[in-house]
Length: 187
Image (cartoon, rainbow, N blue to C red):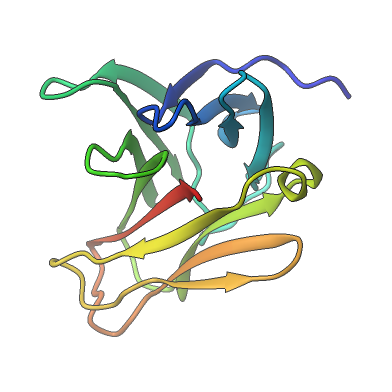
Protein backbone atom coordinates (compact mmCIF):
# COMPACT_ATOMS: atom_id res chain seq x y z
CA UNK A 1 0.00 0.00 0.00
CA UNK A 2 1.42 3.37 -1.02
CA UNK A 3 1.88 5.82 1.81
CA UNK A 4 0.14 9.18 1.55
CA UNK A 5 2.21 12.37 1.78
CA UNK A 6 2.43 14.11 5.17
CA UNK A 7 -0.35 16.53 6.13
CA UNK A 8 2.13 18.62 8.16
CA UNK A 9 5.72 18.54 9.40
CA UNK A 10 8.22 20.28 11.65
CA UNK A 11 12.01 20.08 11.91
CA UNK A 12 14.70 20.43 14.53
CA UNK A 13 17.23 23.19 14.20
CA UNK A 14 20.03 22.21 11.80
CA UNK A 15 23.25 21.16 13.55
CA UNK A 16 26.22 20.44 11.32
CA UNK A 17 23.87 20.38 8.33
CA UNK A 18 21.76 17.55 9.81
CA UNK A 19 18.13 17.80 10.93
CA UNK A 20 15.47 15.67 12.53
CA UNK A 21 11.99 15.97 11.03
CA UNK A 22 8.59 14.79 12.23
CA UNK A 23 6.05 14.19 9.48
CA UNK A 24 2.39 13.91 10.47
CA UNK A 25 0.25 11.44 8.53
CA UNK A 26 -3.52 10.96 8.29
CA UNK A 27 -4.25 7.34 9.24
CA UNK A 28 -8.00 6.84 9.04
CA UNK A 29 -9.52 9.01 11.76
CA UNK A 30 -6.16 9.38 13.58
CA UNK A 31 -3.00 11.38 13.03
CA UNK A 32 0.23 9.42 13.30
CA UNK A 33 3.80 10.52 12.76
CA UNK A 34 7.15 9.32 11.54
CA UNK A 35 10.58 10.58 12.58
CA UNK A 36 13.02 11.22 9.69
CA UNK A 37 16.78 11.85 9.79
CA UNK A 38 17.88 14.41 7.17
CA UNK A 39 21.61 14.21 6.49
CA UNK A 40 24.05 16.85 5.23
CA UNK A 41 23.61 15.95 1.55
CA UNK A 42 19.83 15.95 1.87
CA UNK A 43 19.42 12.18 2.00
CA UNK A 44 16.62 11.06 4.28
CA UNK A 45 15.89 7.96 6.33
CA UNK A 46 12.75 7.15 8.30
CA UNK A 47 13.86 6.10 11.80
CA UNK A 48 10.59 5.54 13.65
CA UNK A 49 6.85 5.35 13.05
CA UNK A 50 4.30 5.99 15.76
CA UNK A 51 1.99 3.04 16.25
CA UNK A 52 -1.55 4.36 16.07
CA UNK A 53 -4.85 2.56 16.34
CA UNK A 54 -7.00 3.01 13.24
CA UNK A 55 -10.31 1.93 11.82
CA UNK A 56 -12.44 2.05 14.95
CA UNK A 57 -9.89 0.29 17.21
CA UNK A 58 -9.87 1.64 20.75
CA UNK A 59 -7.35 1.43 23.53
CA UNK A 60 -7.70 3.61 26.58
CA UNK A 61 -3.92 3.64 27.06
CA UNK A 62 -2.79 4.86 23.61
CA UNK A 63 -3.08 8.45 22.37
CA UNK A 64 -5.99 9.07 20.02
CA UNK A 65 -4.72 12.14 18.13
CA UNK A 66 -7.16 13.40 15.51
CA UNK A 67 -6.01 16.84 14.40
CA UNK A 68 -2.71 18.69 14.00
CA UNK A 69 -1.90 22.41 13.86
CA UNK A 70 1.58 23.77 13.03
CA UNK A 71 2.58 27.31 13.98
CA UNK A 72 5.78 29.37 14.12
CA UNK A 73 7.46 29.71 17.49
CA UNK A 74 7.05 33.25 18.81
CA UNK A 75 10.35 33.52 20.68
CA UNK A 76 12.81 31.64 18.46
CA UNK A 77 13.42 30.00 15.09
CA UNK A 78 11.29 27.03 14.12
CA UNK A 79 7.76 25.71 14.39
CA UNK A 80 5.78 23.65 16.85
CA UNK A 81 3.06 21.12 16.19
CA UNK A 82 0.01 20.82 18.46
CA UNK A 83 -2.10 17.68 18.20
CA UNK A 84 -5.36 16.89 20.00
CA UNK A 85 -7.97 14.16 20.05
CA UNK A 86 -10.24 12.11 22.24
CA UNK A 87 -11.18 8.50 22.81
CA UNK A 88 -14.00 7.56 25.15
CA UNK A 89 -13.73 9.78 28.22
CA UNK A 90 -10.06 10.66 27.62
CA UNK A 91 -8.78 13.82 25.93
CA UNK A 92 -5.28 13.65 24.45
CA UNK A 93 -2.72 16.24 23.41
CA UNK A 94 0.82 16.22 22.05
CA UNK A 95 3.17 19.16 21.47
CA UNK A 96 6.30 18.61 19.36
CA UNK A 97 8.94 21.32 19.07
CA UNK A 98 12.66 21.75 18.36
CA UNK A 99 14.98 21.93 21.35
CA UNK A 100 16.57 25.40 21.18
CA UNK A 101 19.43 24.40 23.51
CA UNK A 102 20.42 21.19 21.72
CA UNK A 103 23.94 20.47 20.49
CA UNK A 104 22.53 17.88 18.02
CA UNK A 105 19.30 17.67 16.01
CA UNK A 106 16.68 17.13 18.73
CA UNK A 107 12.91 17.36 19.13
CA UNK A 108 10.91 17.47 22.36
CA UNK A 109 7.58 15.64 22.71
CA UNK A 110 5.17 16.69 25.48
CA UNK A 111 2.19 14.32 25.75
CA UNK A 112 -0.83 14.60 28.03
CA UNK A 113 -4.09 12.83 28.74
CA UNK A 114 -7.04 14.30 30.62
CA UNK A 115 -8.51 11.34 32.49
CA UNK A 116 -12.14 11.89 33.41
CA UNK A 117 -12.81 8.63 35.25
CA UNK A 118 -10.85 5.92 37.06
CA UNK A 119 -9.87 2.61 35.50
CA UNK A 120 -6.71 3.24 33.46
CA UNK A 121 -3.49 1.47 34.43
CA UNK A 122 -1.05 3.31 32.15
CA UNK A 123 -0.52 5.59 29.14
CA UNK A 124 1.82 4.51 26.34
CA UNK A 125 3.45 6.24 23.34
CA UNK A 126 4.66 3.48 20.99
CA UNK A 127 7.15 3.66 18.12
CA UNK A 128 8.13 0.97 15.62
CA UNK A 129 11.75 0.97 14.53
CA UNK A 130 12.13 0.93 10.76
CA UNK A 131 14.58 -1.06 8.67
CA UNK A 132 16.03 2.27 7.46
CA UNK A 133 17.01 3.16 11.03
CA UNK A 134 19.67 0.45 10.99
CA UNK A 135 21.48 2.06 8.03
CA UNK A 136 21.72 5.61 9.37
CA UNK A 137 23.34 7.42 12.21
CA UNK A 138 22.22 6.50 15.67
CA UNK A 139 19.47 8.22 17.59
CA UNK A 140 18.37 8.13 21.18
CA UNK A 141 15.33 8.73 23.34
CA UNK A 142 15.61 10.69 26.56
CA UNK A 143 12.89 10.79 29.21
CA UNK A 144 12.40 14.33 30.50
CA UNK A 145 11.27 15.21 34.04
CA UNK A 146 8.15 17.17 34.88
CA UNK A 147 8.00 19.08 38.14
CA UNK A 148 4.19 18.77 38.40
CA UNK A 149 4.09 14.95 38.04
CA UNK A 150 4.78 12.52 40.87
CA UNK A 151 5.61 9.60 38.56
CA UNK A 152 8.26 9.65 35.85
CA UNK A 153 7.70 7.67 32.65
CA UNK A 154 9.82 4.64 31.82
CA UNK A 155 11.03 3.25 28.52
CA UNK A 156 10.49 -0.29 27.25
CA UNK A 157 12.68 -1.28 24.30
CA UNK A 158 12.89 -4.25 21.97
CA UNK A 159 14.50 -4.72 18.56
CA UNK A 160 11.22 -3.77 16.90
CA UNK A 161 9.64 -1.22 19.25
CA UNK A 162 10.22 1.57 21.73
CA UNK A 163 7.45 2.43 24.19
CA UNK A 164 7.29 5.37 26.58
CA UNK A 165 5.11 4.23 29.49
CA UNK A 166 3.52 6.46 32.14
CA UNK A 167 1.93 4.37 34.90
CA UNK A 168 -1.29 5.62 36.52
CA UNK A 169 -0.89 5.67 40.31
CA UNK A 170 -3.39 5.90 43.17
CA UNK A 171 -2.33 9.56 43.41
CA UNK A 172 -3.65 10.20 39.89
CA UNK A 173 -7.26 10.61 41.01
CA UNK A 174 -9.69 11.28 38.14
CA UNK A 175 -10.43 13.79 36.90
CA UNK A 176 -6.78 14.68 36.39
CA UNK A 177 -4.24 15.38 33.67
CA UNK A 178 -1.32 12.99 33.28
CA UNK A 179 1.73 14.11 31.31
CA UNK A 180 4.95 12.57 30.03
CA UNK A 181 7.81 14.20 28.13
CA UNK A 182 10.63 12.81 26.07
CA UNK A 183 13.15 13.90 23.45
CA UNK A 184 14.44 12.19 20.31
CA UNK A 185 17.94 13.17 19.22
CA UNK A 186 20.33 12.26 16.41
CA UNK A 187 23.76 11.25 17.69
